[in-house]
Length: 141
Image 1 (cartoon, rainbow, N blue to C red):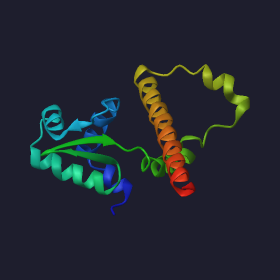
Image 2: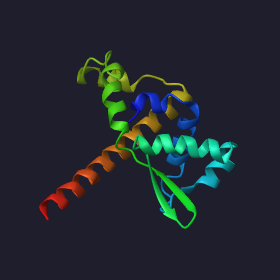
Image 3: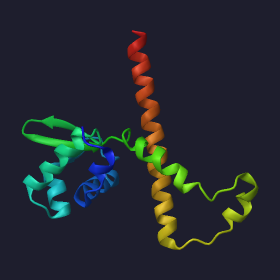
Image 4: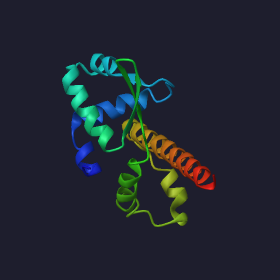
C-alpha cells in the first residue's frame, strides 16, 4: 500500500477528495461520471486516481450494475492529522494564551481553511468513533 502522504501529494487526487468531501452528505455517493464532469478530466484518468485512493483506504466504492459510486473514508486521514498536530501547535503556549489567540484577526481565507480543517477533524473523529463502535460490536458477537 502506498504511503498516505504520497497518495495525497497528487493534485488530481486532492481535487477528487475535495469533491467527495463537498458531497459527503450524499447517501448514495458520487458517480465516476459526476467526478469526470466536475473536474473536466477523462474517465480513464479519474478511474486511475480513484484506484489509488481506494487502495489507500481514502475512498469507498459502491457498485450498482456497471456504475460505481464513491464516498470519502476519513479514517486514513488520522495519520496525517497525527503528523500535523505537533507542527500546528508548536507556538501555542497553553490555556493562558486563549484570550490573545481568540483576539487574533485572521484573513478570510485563513478562517475558511481553519473551518474546513475543523470540520474534517470533527468528521474524522466521528467516523473513527463509528468504526471503533462497529468493530467492538462485531467482536462482542
